[in-house]
Amino acid sequence: QVQLVESGGGLVQAGGSLRLSCAASGSILRINRMGWYRQAPGQQRELVANNPSTGTTNYADSVKGRFTISRDNAKNIVYLQMNSLKPEDTAVYYCNAGILSSATILWDDYWGQGTQVTVSS
Image (cartoon, rainbow, N blue to C red; front, side, top):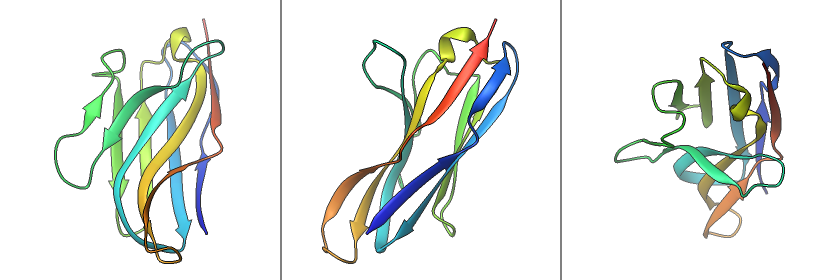
């Protein structure tokens, strides 16, 4: 089995910072992309930042210049550093990864359970 476990969410005032972490574990042969999505109440899940194993990192326009995604490939961890947080950043943040499982020998799309980020004004 493959698991993605997020941590680092919480309550912060506008202008503050948070750092999210997501660790992938289990039957992993290879990981290509890792990224973060978010879903606010009543809204669709949207891409926040995506870090492929090769190629360009992508950010949602709403977070460019404020959020930074990074990866520790040796530990299978992806981070999201969030600075200058705004109330509109309030959402459940989900980790996502494309993983080749050693159990199935198939590439699949995996999601974490989500971590709540609340930004107060």
